[in-house]
Amino acid sequence: MICISIGRGRHKQLSLDHQRAAEMGAKLVELRLDMLIRTVDLPRLLPERPTPVVVTIRRPADGGRWHGSEADRMMLLRNAIVAGVEYVDLEGDIAGSIPRYGKTKRIVSYHNFQETPQNLAEIHQQLASKNADIVKIATMANSATDALRVMQVARDSKIPTIAICMGEYGTATRILAGKWGAPFTFAAIDEEKALAPGQLDYRTLTRRYRYERIQRSTQVYAVIGDPIIQSKSPVVHNAAFDVTGMDAVYVPFRVGRDELFDFFGECEDLDIRGLSVTIPHKERTVAYATDATESVKSIGAANTLVFKGGRTAAFNTDYRAAMQCLSASGEDLAGDALAGKTALLLGSGGVSRALAYGLKLAGARVQVTSRTATNAENFAKELGVEPVRWEERLDLRPNILINGTPVGMFPNVDETPWNEESLEPEMTVFDTIYNPEQTLLVKHARARGCRVITGVDMFIRQAALQFKRFTEKTAPIETMHRAFKRALSPVRYDEDY
Image 1 (tube, helix red, strand yellow):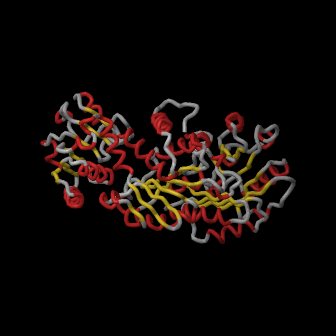
Image 2: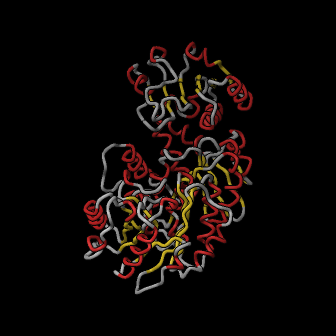
Image 3: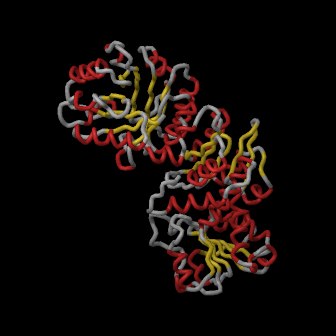
């Protein structure tokens, strides 16, 4: 179940949002009474309420805005219980002072907006001992490791527990709460009204992540990177799971470089079956795999991991997707037809490594340039291609120009790694950026009459190949493409993911 948290300055606004939440389909609403700017009037809010409620009056020390006395706050909580509210949120230090009454269920909670303490198990035990029906732990995650520890506490609990993390590192904990037995998770009524850092909105939880379907048996897949907030991988993979009827969910994890291997080591324990790997982890991922394909070994980068039976298989779907894109763009770029063509790679990251491998395998002459000269030189040596100085790139006239840098990516949409005047109609321009699809480089290439391949095509193809690796099923590529395009569109669709 999803509980929509609402907090407004006036009673009328709070009541209107409550009614709106009910019309959206919410089965439970949290009333954040501490956010009211005037004296709380329970008789205005509780009778004839459109949904069951959780009454919360949070102190500033716990991340709330209560401006009255502690005695008044305690009295309001008692009055809400006497009025028969369905749930009341009580911090662990006051729960013992407020007796159980009637049918109101007690959520005994702990909030920490700075960190995730090391003694989570001890904190959980203390909260559970306060006559709790539900234990709630909400902490600030400063690493992926924090998020994993919180999920482990929820998984191992013998009492219903809502254990979630705030901030970007904690997003997955909010989505996966139901898998670990939480009676509900919290959501904002819309994107602009989140009441805690990293809180997702109701629409996203219900449509993109299908939260109400998540249960113990649900298989978990994820995308990892740093940062990860802009990733559209959850959109396409969850759309694919939905249309194929799979009991699976795909979530984002922000994972820092220094905790990468520790994170991998916990995945199978938390029933994470597979990972999509993005910037900046593709190269380092190879060292963790127990089973890597020849392409992964040659490229030196992996973007897909599958965990099974204590082993970790690594794949690179970027390479195959990129070659599919080139082949689909014209017969002169398919297979052996690439032999003798010159390709210039801008950037020396994981996607460029995949393209270099595929192009070289097809017989093309491959050159690489990077804004950091040593990166291009090391790349060229490892992949067996030609390095080019960044300052000299515009002097070249390659048959295929490939942008593997983030130059032009949202929000820096007015940037381009190549001058328009240096583009020639005979060139094929391949921009691996997918947000936006129509980068400045792509716009310039179209204006100059070049053949164009966008990052959207490559993104969908590599995601479809990942889906196959994850599930051993053929990906519903049209569904994935439609979901992706709609996710980038400013227009909202009823069936959006």
